[in-house]
Amino acid sequence: MQLLVQKRLDKTAKELQPLVKQLLDAQTPNGGWSQTKDMPSDAYATGQTFYALTEAGLSPQAPPLQKAAAFLIKTQRADGSWPMTSRPRKPDDTGAKNTDPITYAATAWATIALARSAPILSAIKAETKEK
Image (cartoon, rainbow, N blue to C red; front, top):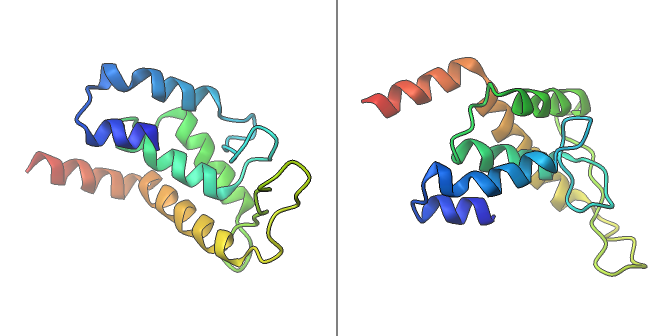
């Protein structure tokens, strides 16, 4: 969220670079991002991070984002959603029992990321900016 706020405050690419680097450094070996250090990569964190990085100017075709797109494609369920676990609120907490809300949100973020990673959509977006 810090990156998105800074971008909306019209910070330059150079000013955004430390936040971009911080996010890229947090990418896990499987290509995704996680909500916390102690959780596995998931579609919610990966989709949000993908979105933030593209808003900051990183090309959807950049290797880290292509790796993230591959993670999302690999982990998508047959019904089109992505598996999610609830983030614990306290150290000994297991999180919410009903994961439907986070699953819906994760599916939305993952879909946004995959749509941005599609070459045709990227080309249309670039063409629109030129006009």
